[in-house]
Length: 310
Image (cartoon, rainbow, N blue to C red; front, side):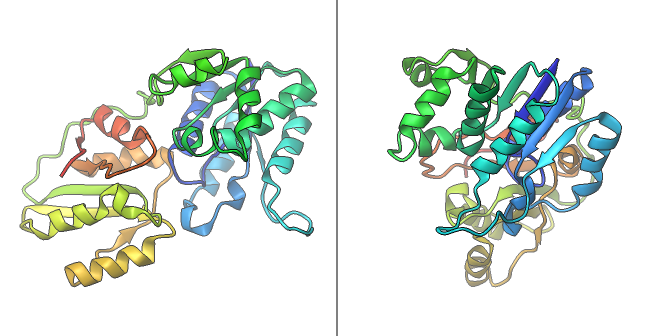
């Protein structure tokens, strides 16, 4: 089977890039031919995962991944924009013109699902849509996107969705197929015997720090940690994002010091990271968008405690 995927991908941080990475590995491991079209090379520095180049080069060199990355600025024009949709579509149509492909898979509605839809209409290759939570909540009913996205969903060969979104997507006329929102790679996330040690129990927050970091419960986590005995509890913050400076300022004013922030890790390094900790926080405080925590799924698979409320 020959599959062309258009989606977020490392070094982009976050759940969709993680899901796309493991989906790509699943197909490659199954002996399928895969092309991956992305704009990961253009991701903002705050959400860029470091140390990805060697592994991605290995996927291309040793596993045969055909990686096409839309990176760098487009030609200057007025009014200026990054033109991700146009450039993703250009790469997609170019790849699809190189022989016969069985399916286009897109991993998030904007701009990837739109690019997949247009490429399918131009080439006749069937399009399978995968979505997140935030794209449905932010874009589907927004007047700037709603008409086009309904066409994307209805035209798709099928829309891979979950129990939270199946009814609304089916009501639009989309041909839905219900699957778990994220199917963990069991060969990578092997349940690990938890460490037996006499030191502090290691807790961690792993994820983005955006402007709405309180919705991730980071203030609650710091308040909780301030009340713990440091001989019994250690806290690691593996996190980055545009809200970092604001969070650090709040932490200093509230805690009297700033805990170090560790850079985010790529999907293939997450199993090793999870083996080094005892519990992860997956808090959701007044979040307006329903999102399943992929990290929580991975952690539970490995026997790491998941804390969802404080």
